Length: 130
Image (cartoon, rainbow, N blue to C red; front, side):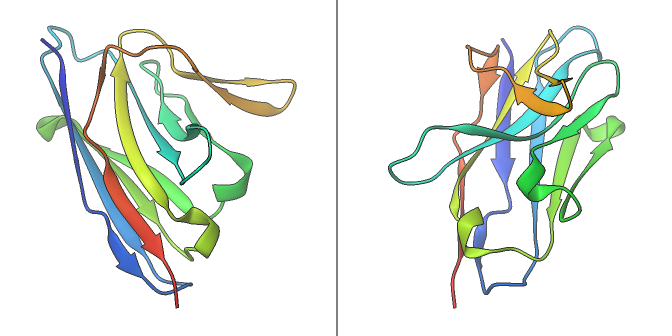
């Protein structure tokens, strides 16, 4: 059974930084995709950043240059470093994992799977406010 666990959310002022962690367990192979999604109050869940099983990384346009994915293979953990946070980044952040690719760039636009993934974490809240 695949399990996903996030941590690292919190409250920061605009311009601040947070680092989210996502630990994945249960895959027999080390080849799987991991992605961060977020859902603000009253809005649909949207993809934020993803690393596919082939190593390709995708970011939604609004976070490019501010958010960075890194990975600790030994710990099966994916990190999302979020810098220069803005109030519009406020949301519940969810990590998801799947054996298939989760993201792609189509006609120059990053797209993220909208369907079900193998597993989701419980979410971690990020609040950016002065």
